[in-house]
Image 1 (spheres, rainbow, N blue to C red):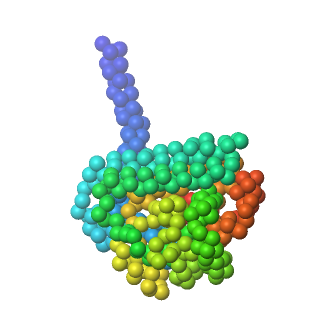
Image 2 (spheres, rainbow, N blue to C red):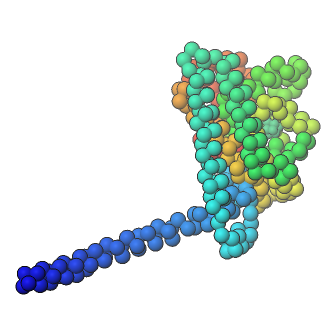
Image 3 (cartoon, protein in one colour):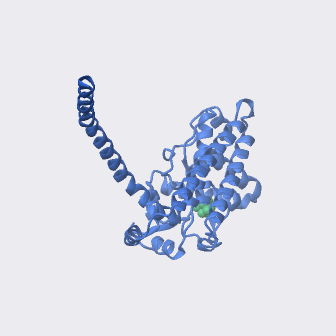
Length: 329
Ligand code: SF4
């Protein structure tokens, strides 16, 4: 009995010791979980706003990603009033997964096409054509998925966005050069080369902002239409607007205050095609920079062996900017 009493007592003290030593750990764990939840909440609470509409890109300036299409006040109201539907979170995650998958496929396709002895100028042009087709497909998929067809304001003859710097990869530049050589008459080709040279003289070395403020039309813009529409670079394919009047006002204003409303899901998918193309070029051992279209196209047209030299690893085209998602255009 004495023994059992003594056991009970030692049991009680053991429990007391256990509770005293475990409680701080439990409390610490709860505190950690609460901190993690507090940190994660702003990220998830903002998801519908991020998904719902678009990115704003500055019409004049770097055209980099800025945020959503929605105004700050509207975003605040949304945050306060709406609970985050689970479907929005799932949708956003699926969207990002689809974009990354597009990038991966484009990278692999580019590496496959330009491997070893397959590296010919014709192959390079085919890669540009293939990536442009994928970019169009990605654009249309995003438009269909979010029912945006009637909300995109871009129409034939609307060219407010063709007055700024365009960046393109070498395959895209070589494809446009080849198109101009084969599709245009000698006179039209000479006129295009003249416009390219004149614009290059005026704009070479300009920053993105200076180029936009100069408001000079792209040398390939003829009567407010893109003269190389079927072979235009991915940068021009992904660029779009939800409101043409903002594009017009932004073009006419001298300040850099307006942003162009764009749909994030569309922009993101097509950007990943461009990124996959550049990643594939790099993996295939080729230079994977983005180049200012006017200068690069002029060089491509004036240098008959530019494709072969570029394939040999020579630096034929001056680099415009490092690649990346933020290189909107
Ligand atoms: S290439 Fe065509 S679409 Fe792109 S900026 Fe020039 S004219 Fe516009």
